[in-house]
Image 1: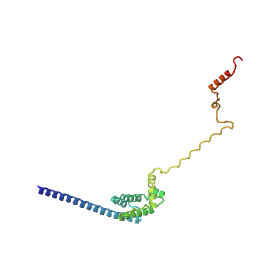
Image 2: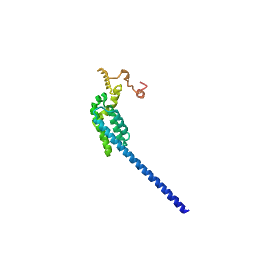
Image 3: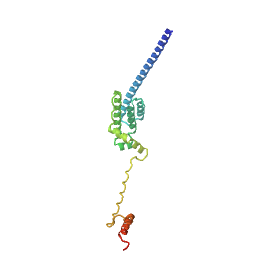
Image 4: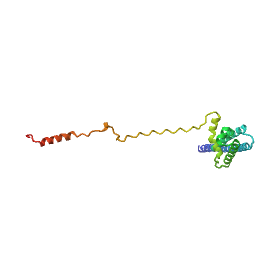
Length: 211
């Protein structure tokens, strides 16, 4: 009986160990595949940004569409959001409203955006801290919504300052002889009734009834 229990315990232990080892190997293999796919996507995305920066003509919609698809595979959230902002602004940098509000020409904006995207991808590959957006990219992001609203035919979001309230009129000065109190408010101070009664009693007591 004891031998049978030992055999069953050994078989269960071997089965559990085999399952854990198989699961761990599969997990590591999947992680390696995902890491390799992300690295390949990052390299392809880097090549697309370089080609977009060096291209003499305007931004190509097919290139930007492929770059946007590859940006989805980036695992780091901040890197993914930065690259998607760059791709979105590359589509919109030729809008005249965006050029006018930001003060950055489309050719210069495309070069700045591609350089910033390459710096972000390079830092992601090296595992370094992501670089801050340059001044040109920040200006484009700041006026992007307003430029799109104007391009769509909506009114600009800037509002005129409200007029200052008119000052309240000063109160009229009182006349020189007026003390500020009405006659009705003046009260005559009367002598208390008890004092008058005691005074009458004293006067009656001081007089002689025979006089």
